[in-house]
Length: 313
Image (cartoon, rainbow, N blue to C red; front, side, top):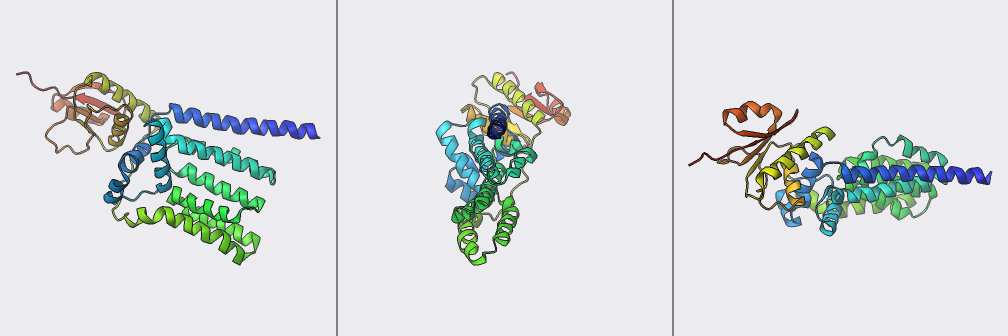
């Protein structure tokens, strides 16, 4: 009997380790996505003073702060901006493993978690999920009541779209325990305080409506990176101005920061400027580029990179 338990334990640990290894591989190899680049370009790259002055609401406040720290330590790269998610992915798996010792069915959460890629993406969804799972695990063990509330509060601060889910879980735990006064004082109040401490200042400045964050598919992210490689080869250290459609502007700026391409001016999506040296358009813009006698350097099913060459004197 003891041998069977040991074998099952090893199999479970190997399974969870394999999940985490896949997450690390994804974080290291996947091209940066539009939403990840937008979060970096608007809330991580600028100083805190600049972010607050912009009055753009950030739903991933806690994650933005963690990502800023990660980038400061390890420089800009797809892996460094995703590192906080990976660490919370480890917390998520550890929380499941810990809870499964008391409730074996909790191990099924690792199987039914269909969005493992949340822990390999630079946004707050995986962080919020891991903190909720940690709170549930602590509640099952009936330990560290204050920490349960803090985990729920920080999950909301990591991604505000988890507010309702975190509140429902907290209230469900409260109803099950039937110790309303104790759990209100030790769980709900610390959770509310933790969320307010992180969110108070950012939400006080969140008066403007944030533009819709353009997201790229995995295939589009790969194609866009190929287009930017073609741009880098063509520019060859020259100072260039770049126009990018809204979906690619944050990604261009991200790779500009990663490769320290100071010869690239920050990409703009406003065509009213006098002129640009390079235009990264959607594939449907081929006719527009042809009308303006631009040289096409790269083209695929989604994107087109065109170069404006000054007329010879």
